[in-house]
Length: 444
Image (cartoon, rainbow, N blue to C red; front, side, top):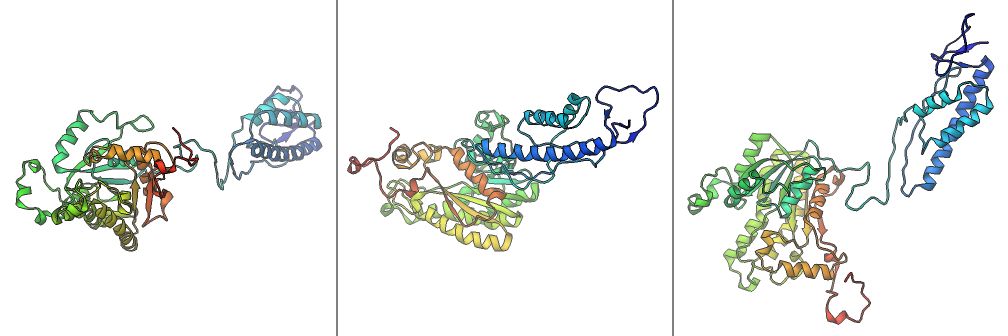
């Protein structure tokens, strides 16, 4: 009788050699050894086909993967990396094999099979359907590790700028922010004293880290543009290098480059006035702070943006629909911003390989929006009339920005993306008494 040793080599036993218990030895004659090898190959292959069929038939989601088993040469024990749903298939497989060939210590050989780790040499694709709400499909995460973002217009913890910063941070990006100079000290103090800690919590339980806060007034391109009354204003005292050009130079000096630029700022000094009552000065001020500021930011930050980068701004549906109460030239400023997005996408894409998009966000109870005076009314209207009858969260806008900034949106530029529960698609307000006799689904 020949002995098939654990190292796969066959040799004659010595006189005093006694049959060993598993795992060292398995006894077969040469012909049985070859039969065992061929039987194992055939049975393992059949088991894989059966396992794959059962997984596809029973799973509610689709998983497609290409794998190759690892088999030893004939004459050796075959160890395979088995992809299986459970060990029951392997147990039944062993029963079949043990009845087909006289192999001792079957329990231990079964242990050898089940303890072998599954190895996948090449994964083609993995598609999952029915993922949980607000959770990316497994295998397709938004990964911004190693990227650096500059968000212009963060002055508190409840606006869209803050939400975008959090989503980018959750995806792994390093966060820099530009804060309006008069609000800088309050923001930095609140951040330092932990007043924003609850708002800084990321999905993994850690706190969002802001690497650096820069003073910024995007109304002024360079120091020469700053009038004397602003230079001497006590609210600007103690701050320096806060024009757009200087902010870009400071970021370049500190970090060298960025990958993501976010424009999350707007101002209309006469926003509560109807357009017919808006002064030229008020109208131009709205355009300057809310639209041209984006052009200026891109102009000065593009030279330090890495190719493949992304720039995002925030707009509002008043650019294309009549929203009474949103006056002072702000509707015109948002329309200009959207038009500029398309032109900037072409120029930034051709010259710097940077994508430019804008998000049309629905109403949010931010401090800035409350200054308009009718934000609660707009939120109620949206809930009553939008296809999705729920209040929009800042996180939903932040997550969209993270997607647009990621490689997953590598072919999206010059786009206007609506994040408003679908309100933009409506042609009428279905809460009107005129539609009371129609059978319109309603959550309430």
